[in-house]
Length: 149
Image (tube, rainbow, N blue to C red):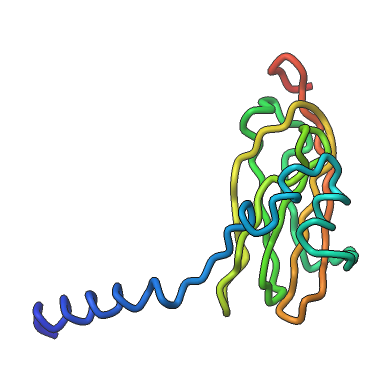
């Protein structure tokens, strides 16, 4: 393929990409979720009255003991065909951590670092493409004083 054709195709793809991506600004659309002080209240503010059910198809990976509460690695994976994925914690004043919009056919394999003021529980909620809610939880201990153990 010659260079001009390649560049032309690249520009065409770049022009179409923003039209294909449609993310929701959950902080603007659902502001009460970001003010909620409990996980249940934050889930209700985001998803309404639907209750998530535990699902072993979701992997929520954290260290058993985090030596630094300011940078806790969290990995979320699932093969569920997801519409949204949300992460919550029960330690900090506001429970909602983040929500991702999953593009159609997207792969849920996310890794982030979060901040927690102490030991507690993390909960991930996956909304599938049918609108059903699935969840997984993980207990996490944050070592005080910056030392494990």
